[in-house]
Image 1: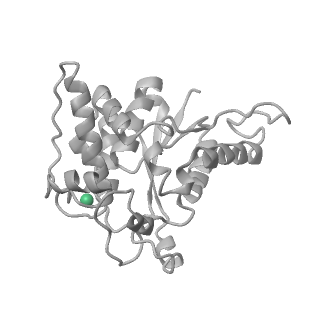
Image 2: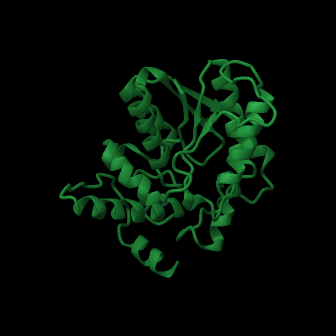
Amino acid sequence: MDKALVVLSGGLDSTTLLYMAVKQLGAENVKAISFNYGQRHWKELRFAGHSCGDFGIPRKLVDISFLKVLFQNSGSSLVTEEDVPEGHYAEDTMKSTVVPNRNMIMASIAAGYAISENIDSLWLGVHAGDHFVYPDCRPRFFNVLNAAICIGNDSFGPIGEVIPGAELQRFVHTPFINISKADIAIEALRLGVPLEGTWSCYKGDTVHCGKCGTCVERLEAINEAIHYHDGYGRHYVDGTAYADTEFWKEAVKTA
Ligand SMILES: [Zn+2]
């Protein structure tokens, strides 16, 4: 693996992934791609742009906002006018944040772009905590996706020859797929990711709301990571501003 294309949303997970790719391969070997899929706000995409700017990494912003019209009957609160649910991800209400076939669509476009740029790996920041709500964040999905991309691009660009029966190359990289959001936050602090330079909130207000699913998940993970590092005598502070800093504690208890 020499080069990486990182799918970057601007959230904690994908920004940590970007830092990891830069550390492993050097900024000159990393590119990023972000998607505007008709989400309610542009905030995290702007944060993604800033993170790339810090490293001088080129970033492609791909507009797939037509999905919003195409998927208007999906019931997904992320692309429709429905209210974004508050609370913990373990709750049933979070199913309304599923966008049909989202990772397949984004990974397909990103893979095509990577191959056309002769980039030999595609990095995605999915993690174990996503498995419960999102079927297209599970290991089985990415194994099959990796196989489909390699077989579908046999001997083309950076994809080597696909020999029947032999193990396929690992084009799709999901280093966080079996670790928790808290483990990613621990990694983020270790890599020096500025937490306030990432955006997780599903709502697009001035500051993080502290109550939506991603805010609750983020606060729980960051607090666990800070406690982890405290044990080693390193004290980190989350510089992110939140409208509510207490709600998540109750949401985590009742989940
Ligand atoms: Zn929020």
